[in-house]
Amino acid sequence: MDSKFVIEKGIPFAGRTEVKVLELEPGYVKMMMPLQPNLNHVGTMYAGALFTLAELPGGAIFLSTFDASQFYPLVKGMEIKFLKPAATDITVEVRLDPDEAAKIRETANDVGKADYDWDCELKDANGQVVAVSSNRYQLRRMKPSGA
Image (cartoon, rainbow, N blue to C red; front, side):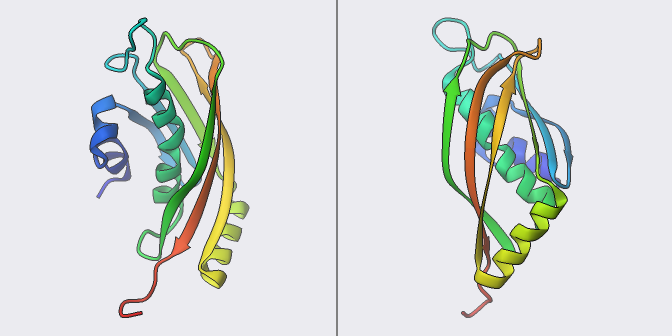
């Protein structure tokens, strides 16, 4: 199944936000959360939509970088800081260095799991940062069948 489809529509909640995967390749994703239909009571983007946009790259990077038949990801924690109202569509870009991805994969293979993290900047249509997040993940090795 297409990874973009899985991110945009595979999680029903995310599908309702109309989030879009603009670019996706191993170790890189660029996503966009549209202002409509994610407005709050004051006409800016709902905080939950911003949080969702900061969280979804974890799944996108996983799908484009790691083997889903051998591993699965977990979100261990996130913090988000809202810096200014988001009054346009919002984008986020996340990169995971290939060497770092290889280390994560190796550790997960060796010990069954590997922690990793990154920071995100959520930007409006003018390139202004409206929110920042710190994301912590864990890659886990699947247990063999019958184990």
